[in-house]
Image (cartoon, rainbow, N blue to C red; front, side):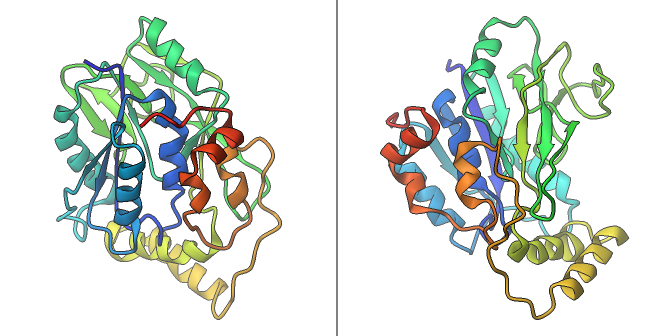
Length: 281
């Protein structure tokens, strides 16, 4: 049995403005294996995953389970259903759920790993710092447990972003999923839901037209964004926060759209930027 495995299901991450490569790389040094499921990408995302598999063959397990209910299922259920199919493939003691828009800080990942090795609790709850392109300020809230022991009956929930066993645990009063008993820590994970203005409209469209068709708020958000950015050409934004961010995303702060940078596959650049060893194929 291995100790820690990551799990991620996503589709068309590039067009959606997801910092998915940075998110995977942020925990690659502490994971024995990361199970990545491409659910049917047509925008180049699958090819990026294949390149990651070639670069780190022993670390990356690439799957292609299509999200066949994508057009009709509430978005939070799609990833849950697919990831639930992947969980039985994982033989690790702990599991970390990787969202396509979440990045862990290089200065804390080994603290998390050491905590997993020493705690008697069954899960770790971290504060999530939400950072968007439209503001200099990030706000913090406690959300789903992203790190849990791979216990019998472990379930994926909250859109593939959290874990639970049996009934929902709200041990810390945070109102979302968990696996009791929990260990609560101060160092955050960083969530980038709308970091790139050029991808914001596409992401809003997915929710309005496919993922949450009954949600009037999502429809209004999509229409508002279309009107706000009608005919606009996006340029590099200078208001994006950069201080305190994980090193892997600092080069993206202020960019109008997401793109996969070549240096993310340069082992020397990764070590120089994060101080971590990525020569771990």
